[in-house]
Image: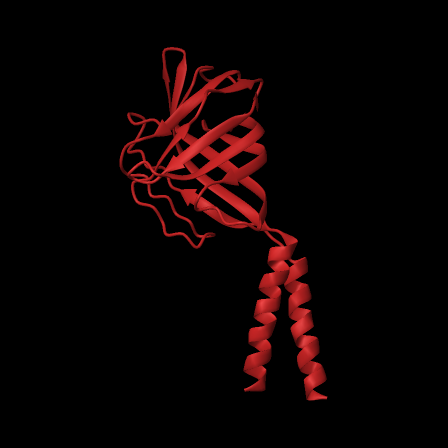
Length: 196
């Protein structure tokens, strides 16, 4: 009877892990800028929602945290929007954003087919991607449903161009096979501990 209960508990653990795939924070950074004098992004549309978004951070001070990865955090990381992102009435086209470590070694790339550029009611804005893929040396397999957002702040109008600082967060969901493997591993640990 005890063995039956143990097996049931192990399978229940697998089922709960396999069915409970939820998003977790993959990579994030707080705004590295000391203020509007050091912008990360430029938007050619000024305070509107049509224009080109460009930018990056290629100096020191960006602390890239990787809570959802086995990789370490990265001090003085850098990133660059590969090509200008075209925005028309708040809808952005495809884009690529490359991240690097402090010595310019590639860490990962975000690719997206479209995005939304939203001006918020607090005098800020955000860029949220759609149909997103993360790739690169620090991105493990077995992840799906990527999401990211750049939250813009400290907006300053310089001529017709809006300059902004930014923070960043991203998330992902483990694929079902990854969740099942994780659940099986946890079930084995639980079974071993109960036998002891």
